[in-house]
Image: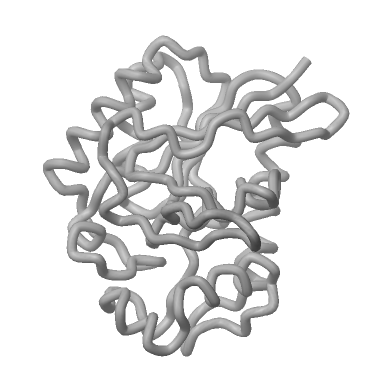
Length: 222
């Protein structure tokens, strides 16, 4: 028996559209974002989910609520450890301002390996990776089999996918995109799909961080 995890990034927000860092800040979904979420929800409507989790951030809750609406009796749970990275003083600031301090292609790997001390007023790489790993471990422990929906954020979902398959690097996760992971009963984990753009949202809020010796691929902004 296996467990399937379907991971969905939240729909486009106003901060996404303006290329501003969100992190623990929040912003409503744009009209494009709401349309994309409806498309993804329809795409997943014929799936049989046995559990549903999301970040407590409003953009994730709005996305998850639209998906769950198609599934009678599916209870949605929030987990604060599924939140995006806390960017500290750079919350709601333009991406280029952060790049001037810490280029994205340097910042992200050091966050993922837990060595980054954190941006001013923000969250360290160790704390970030510890909490998101704990969140997914709890989900897997609570659901040894079945099909679980997890709605979250570009960097956080991408970071967990990178722990499942480090060769992927940080995969592009467009807004409202779908990724799937299989968890076997022996604990083995495999990324089946990553960043499928079912809502045709594109990579407007995505950036690139390749793994060593790999071609650059778009990587989700926060």
